[in-house]
Image 1 (tube, helix red, strand yellow):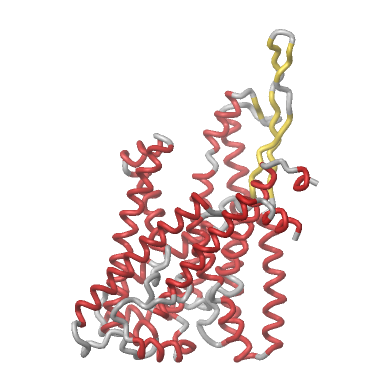
Image 2 (image 1 turned 45 degrees about the vertical axis):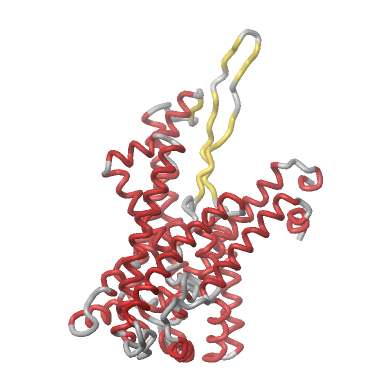
Length: 439
């Protein structure tokens, strides 16, 4: 409450938070607006039958679109095409010399990389929206789990309405990218992460209502108690650090002595935060791109059924293994980019610093890499366990694929993004050096 009071009394910070909330409100309004050409009567019947269609590919995509897929809205694809594009560009940076050259150019090269990331995101959004609309119009039961004609072929200008819906959903993804960048420039927190945060959190109240309808108030209380302990565990691990001591050699310049200070390099247990979970979730969407363009019946339907039963069911062993390995892999991948032992060892050597008992240069590099690998493993395993096991337990207890996100991916993203926002707020308060804030 004291921090909230300090935030509200600082005009600049207050305006940033209000602007961020405004962007979230715009996003949530866009999620509720159906794309052009969608039959509103069929959409209403889908909402009534939604309890029976929460598993499989639909349930997975609906979680990360904040209900946008269920409404077939302008923002149905969410921001995940952009994240998938970011993963592709980062991987290609190692293989394509031109991208590597841009990365070495600093801010100028990063702007070029960001621009190409947007181009690839638009292409992915166009492909995915086309696949989803095609599947919904041809075989809605294979996607939603219920037979509902959102794009009746009997309606006039059917093809034109389908094309218009694809264009509007692709444009919605482009608009979300712009809104996320606006948050980065004028708001608080990472814009893309904030939009995903708004998507996954928006589904929690509905899930609480569903738990109450299936198991009663006692199950709701148990779920909320477990949720509190889960958030406490996430915060505990997120704040965990391994501090590597660093000493600086003394040197005399004239009559003055410089250096001789002792400090440390803080390495977080979970250095990557919720980024591996978001990246893994986005990469797991690639099978849906393939499934959506397959034939509506025959072997295409067989493939979609297999994916629904094995890769998009939270209590299925295949989903747990694939998603868990992706989270661990992306944790190591992100940490190798965020913390480079070679560059850090070189910076220490140039500044006269050294790790006690370790020679500067290659030995320091190996020492830092060893510590980074050792602390990344428990952090990555923790992310995977929290993202998967509670969700699987909830899905099994409720007897269906309703465990997506609750006490798993949703809570990890919500807690992680909230912590990052609070850190930014506290750092901006401290940077103003107001006496009332430092007490």
